[in-house]
Image 1: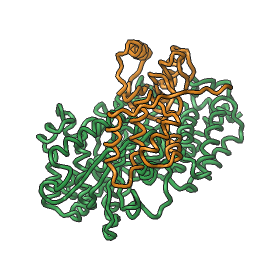
Image 2 (image 1 turned 120 degrees about the vertical axis):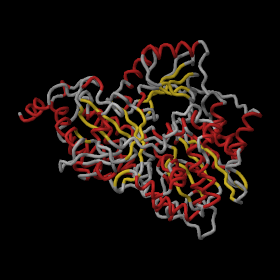
Image 3 (image 1 turned 180 degrees about the horizontal axis):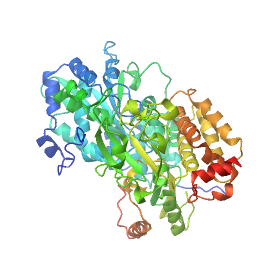
Image 4 (image 1 turned 45 degrees about the vertical axis):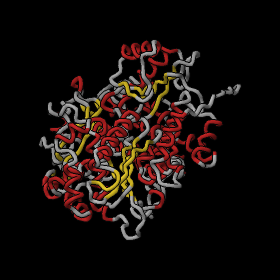
Length: 174
Length: 452
């Protein structure tokens, strides 16, 4: 399989830097590394929801750690993406409690509707569909996570409406 | 039995905001604790209350606090574990989302009791909107003088921050959580040393669940003795239960411990019985890690006593005929649930979430997932069931942290109580074709088929 190359424009804005410094300020002198997870979240959110190697290197510089210390964290935690994702990424919970209330069926429905496989992204880069493990909404399934928010008690109609709202730019991600 | 401690004020409009929370008696406990009590007196009150850790292990909280090393003179920390990720559990999210100041108030008192001046709330990354709710609530607490330097003029200083994870179940384990808070992968540490001696940045640290810390204000306001009067025996106080599955009213409930499982499951005030009135098949009382129980052990213990919502009664019979209170993730299954498929689902979860440090867990969870997948999909072999049993028994007790046990127990319990269903899958694969094809015939017939 041909390996795709992606480029990412790095832009640490003043606003983003202020947020990064706010996080770093939460830890004692000399413990900058502790800010790793919150900083990576903030940086990823500001860069189309993924972290390229140059971007990780940049974070390493900011936190004054070796690049490998950032890579090992990014590869460990599932919320950090090493490749571009759809602008709107639907993450469906498929663990037991959601599954028995139709979680896996909803995941299949979403894949069919958007014409992609689980883990895939539409060609226009708008949508991705991912199956995830328990998101802590067990009593409200089936459900999905989109950006910072949960959409619960899903039905096919609700999902259709959500996709339509995304297309019209009505959905806030954070 | 409708006693409420944590959710007493949950229905007051605007209780999420500082002003409303304060008007309804909020932060009174902080005043009482910091101005009129010594740290050791608070630890004593918590000990007297008998409250047990609500995260899953049920370790007495006062005892845990008494282990913190105050002699070395190193800075101490409280870390609130809000990494709630146990499948079936969503109670901490409910508390933080709807009444965030209750947790912050509890965290201030607990930090004071531990003589900590820098504390954190570690919340799972997926709860990002709750992270922002907590950030706002903490800002309000700073603005009103409950946090920062010289709180209430007493000379006590405390900084409290919220820290987010990034999608790793393992970070709910306290030493993995500490590693993660230090900006590393969530690999659990070998104990000892325990965090109470060497935790965050090698400094004495106590890690407690959100629900445990949220109960501290009530204990300070009303005394540990009063708290100990609530509940039954060694299961003191109230417990939040996250209920999900095939029941009429899923959601978060606060119950006084000691209620019967029957009342909780079937009364309209609580779960309201089964949806579509299909028969009850199985339940898990404490999140995915604890053993699943078949219908005949749910309302009665093996001795024929009523099964109660207490640590002791849910565990009655050990793992042979009992289970565990765990985190209070109450999952109910009706006859349309396939135990093999469900066990495969859990094994996939544990395989995905294993940190990879210990080989029994890293490899074993993967093998279990693969074997269960092939049994569920009609490619199982007769010896697979014994092989599964063998693998799970070799994971249990052989790993640094309890994730290995948590991955082994659901598999063991499923085979122990539902072996016939596994055999049926192996011997009659054509009858179990996809996720909609559960064991759709009476168990008598299944038994008959298996006996041929």
